[in-house]
Image (cartoon, rainbow, N blue to C red; front, side, top):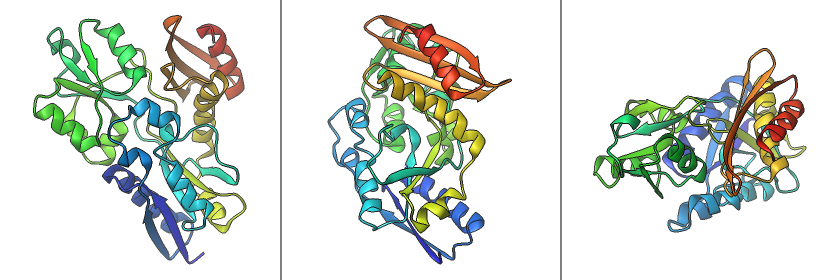
Length: 285
């Protein structure tokens, strides 16, 4: 194909991610021209509904997927953690091209330096549950807005600190804002956090172009994380975290907080199916 159209949300972070994929398309797929198609989404327009509810229904991705289905675009770029495990008929994830840091980070103040009762911004039940384990004396408070807005709310003193994804800060050139990175033993990230997903309509020329960007090794790890999400029916509702790494096979670190309480597990296996089955048993899911 001489020209590829890439659908994306219009936020600064989404555009940075789409531009990154556009660079890969030009370099690896021999495409002469790449056009970005900005698509407004319900999640961008709705500034009042909680992020957990919006993510549950795919409010940040559905309109972008519609651009593929009606052929306004050949490819779509998503933050994988925003993408529901159930996809519309006729679409597929053709590539996981890269993953930046999957870690959660604190901005504004280091955890041990926060006074008791400090307001810490996060709209993620998963992050809030793990923050309460680390510092029960702090107050997780819902926070909406893009990365720049959240950083501004901390700088203005509305929040003493905020928990964000390190990958988003890296992609926006704001890694300097990080005051503390959480290891996986302290805060388990969302399934797919930091990873990009390239989606296309099945059987199209765009799917063939996008497929050239896939990282098979990364795909296996992300499959393990999203398989746990899919098989448990967990996620935003029950505060699930999962991150897979290569470590003499696949090592999966998982966290869940639900009506039975908060618990975590670290398991190993040779395949995504094996580690997920073991993690479910360890977590009582």
